[in-house]
Image (spheres, one colour):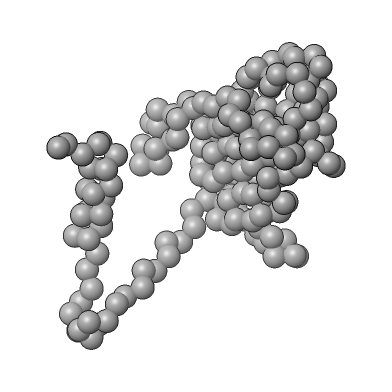
Length: 191
């Protein structure tokens, strides 16, 4: 039986990692284990280097806004990893109480970020008490090994259909082209 491509790729990566990591025989007693050393964080060329704020939370990613035509509402930032730092800055999944609100007649919605681009995204909607449902997704991750020749189409905005009529919590998750990810949330009322 032939393994699925993803399983074969995972096994190949494990084999490559095992072959490329060597430890001099004299540095470790027999039978002992070596803990991996974490790699240093990488930073996005389009964003400033991270520096923790006074409260120890790393600098946040760019603001994300949701709206339509000439209206946009900045979203509540949730969990993120950006420029070498990660933080959970809001209760997640969020409830509609206190979220920035977007009211629409069912027009297509536009999500955008300021001063950065993303190459993969997904959006969900749901009620405070229900499980979120997928609404839309798109893009492909940028291959960091390809550098400037990366085939991933990065963008600073996407458009997708509104959820059906109702009062919803809409969450957007983006993966930045230069590395990192962020979640944003809104209360969306569709008439």
